[in-house]
Image (cartoon, rainbow over the protein chains, first blue to last red):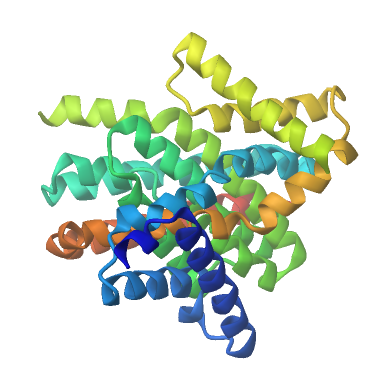
Length: 234
Length: 110
């Protein structure tokens, strides 16, 4: 039976079925923790544990699915071009906001983790935790962290932003929907963007663009920031 | 659709090629994203020629990272050992990021 689970088609099939099922579940019950990605991942992990299937066996098929992350990142460039016109009149403030938020986020997570004295590979895996999963994974591969840890935390950050982002921002006195959208895209990538679209269409567009811009900024500076801090503290 | 896919994969390949030859510290797909944006802005590529493929890829983006999420199962123990510092660092820095981004637009945006 273990041989059977090593067939790539097993990993491909269970990924698609789990995701499709999780999306149906979300349509029926609109509850934040029923996030389709979270539900799909938890159900696949449970299945693998129950039937004692190694992750490596699952991933023989899984990697055919994750292969498409590469072209999807390129597709984000097309999305950015399409929506670019809508933020043009606010462009300078928008870029400043995303850059300031993005850089502060990377600095803060590195500083906190250094203070708590967690091992370096965890810091390397979490530095890019605010950006969209495919980009965060690529950054982690370059910095020497573990991409799977990155993926898990990035998804958790997205769900946190989706669930609590607008509430926290409103408590802190933010009123502008565009501000909430930009903040969600900068801090909580695509999953946060889904929430921004619930606030308003324009907030969603700003959020999607913030996600792309912060992806690029974070990809460019994270390796250097990590080098700088590890240099200072070792 | 085929033409659109060829463009997307073409730009991905171009990004990978450039990072490979110049040994840039940036992933090929991120460079590809930047290059396709540039090509669209400079009208080297038409939006209609790439949109069919890019729309589909973005629609299913979340499906594509599920295998990485599942991979987290291999690292359960590490995460469990450091769950408190990780949670504090991640939540605090996320809230700070949210606020810094939002307040700048709130104060200076139109």
